[in-house]
Image (cartoon, rainbow, N blue to C red):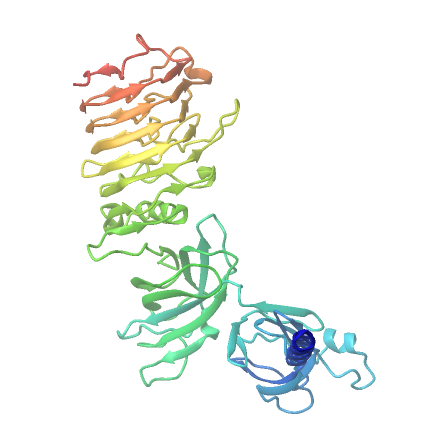
Length: 510
């Protein structure tokens, strides 16, 4: 019995060892197969779209992916008419991320070297619209020069622009139509000639860009993620009396970034000579909900709202805007921007914060001697029909010297409408030798109700020190202040009888 038991144990050990060896061999085999698959060559098939390449040019391309890059491959060009379709075999680079393109000319022609050929007669720059390899399309639209390497990536921001010419007599033009895009932080693209674009629709007349009832499509690279506005212009003088009539411009981000949706701007204007609508700038409006409210989702949207209102277009000036999220401005300096509402344009719509908070709004810097100029509040002037409500502003810095619209306040310089259910806290408000300094509004000619100012410093500087007034809600009230309060606020360098007063002059709150 003992021998039998020992034999069984020995057999079990041998069996376990055999199983372990088989498992190890299988793992090694799987690793070998995996490694082989990783290095296995595959076929790359691709095409260049909407490009003009001259026969003298030779174009080379390599594919870059998550596992590395292919070698350089000659894809077309040279001494024969180029084919824009190409294919080659190389290692599997995994997920495709970008393409690198290089262009040159034959190494010797008529005894010249390559660099001489590039500089003299043979090389002509070209700009492919896109490159597609194995189904992965990457937009380019950049002029490529001789002997340099250009990498085009899926992360590059690219916009598709569709420009529609109106269907009215003489609306078309043979002149060059240019467009220039602007971002939310002052960025801009080059001025781009759209008359070299692709005509995707036409009226049956000559197949040219910007003919009557036609649509021209171009792709535009940009180093910013949001388009705030664009400028349209014509080159040269118009022979026809009316020039060109644009019906609409549609903008869509098609590569890179996070800007979603299709934004259509109705133009319906004539462009003619320099003295008659030769160049005009148009704002790309915010998206709207089913109730036609413009949606303010982030810091960029707040900038776009400012541009919309200050354009003077009445549907924007009197529009309804809703804040959909808390916005952290992260100290971004609004000094290069304007307030919402200008000296000539009062905000006459509704801004509903929906209980959200705008934090770290910065209209200057809290260091002595810094002059933020004329930007002294989120809104400049709130008109009689304007309303700002259900909003908290936390950590604002409104640090200025003078003001286009007399006054300075975190919410507005001047209120002629309604400010309600608004809280300003943990902020700093400063103004120089200019009247009307307050936590909510500099001067109130309308209604401020159910508002509070907490833990905020209100300060006079320079020529305003000890000779100008200030107030927690507003300095001067010619309207109604109702059910408002202040807590733990500080007053510096200003003339005030009692630091607990909500308002220096006018009606007391109830």
